Image 1: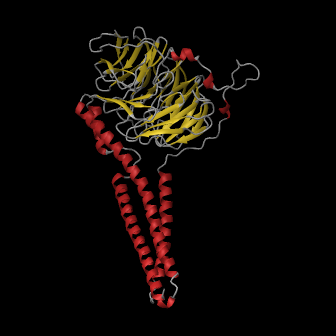
Image 2: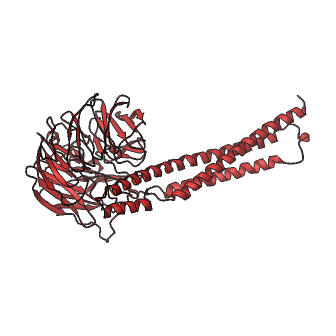
Image 3: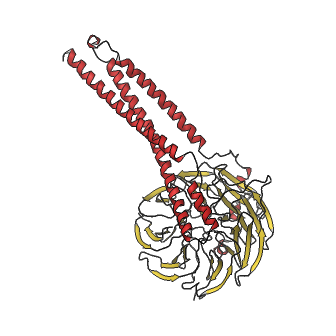
Length: 584
């Protein structure tokens, strides 16, 4: 082949490489422009609030009976959250495309430069020196890529939640139990406390004794009517607002309320509904810190209390954690600091033996911690860097050792119950995570709106095995799923009750209703109970693949809090009353 043809071929290849580089450069410029516009439009706010939404929420606070205002605020809130997370996803993907575009442009100019150097006969090359320009372009693009990467790292560090380093605690081996025999010096506080059989007869947590949404009771009310009073043992007017679930132990019911003026714990008698006592929980701050801002839905008493035979444990959106005896006396109190949270702290307490688990996923000083129920002292705490969440920790006890599942956006941890040691991390669901996970046997499932539903199987000594992902249809925004006998049940804030197959995640049946659900569904006596948030209509279904609705029970008022099932009664916290349902 003669020299001219070789030169022509090399020149053609070089022009192709330069063309590819210019296309990549234009692509990079376009992506950069779109990212800049998105950043300018959305701003650097780490919350999902807006002036329009704030005005809508203020209007609701001033006119709580205005249903149109309530619906508008709810729609704006959901739209704001959806828009925010779409923007975050766009930014993350855009930064990746920007870097890839720069790499492609640099590679194109670099190839053009190298081809220019490889032309075999320099006598055929014109006097112009385009190779020098290509070489300079490569260096400029590489420099821009380095600067962009450094800028991206700085942004990530600035807008990631800060976590203070925490030294490993000496108490992480457990507490000494003086009642043990010689040779048994250390035992986890989680192994103390009430016997399992006794615990199963109570309602010590948000979703029952196992925090799974299932209860072992064999009898539960089936039919009642709150509007007519049939099947209702008693109802009492609630003194203040709050959306936390009642905790029940023997003949006592405990609820929490919260407002700017006061945070309180109330105790009622299960037989009569009589108020036994009320205790104010003082603000634990010593420096007169301002109360955190909270939304109307969340308030200061969204976190459900926990209880045992001796005490009730409460936590509020002010950062105050306290233990009271069954007479209403404060035994101990801890101040955890003001929560830095765009809606307000809502994660509920999880009771495990003589241990309370607290998920403190805030903008700063985020952590998961265990507190001793007897003294209020911290047994262990493990720092986290996962962003905000409103989910509650769950303890799985059916594996080789108890594991705490701590659930947040794009990060679900498995934590050793006795020590707080992080065992593994998986990416389960994204978005604003409020629903907790559910579990049965060695399998756990997570679901969140605008994201997906996913199932994992625990394997002793190894990371969980992902079973499947389901990304179609609606998923819960607040309510946690429940599973039993190979089926998963979810309720959504748009008014759907849906059953999925645990084998592959596919939908088995779906029922649509007018009003949405915030309260988590509960399985009791082999039946599925779901109550909506607008009118408080309890719908009861047979568990299984048919989805047969066997009862519709109106309450006459909305219900946000998950009901408590104890003995043959259901205790319901409505928007106006506390109810005891026994059925007909």
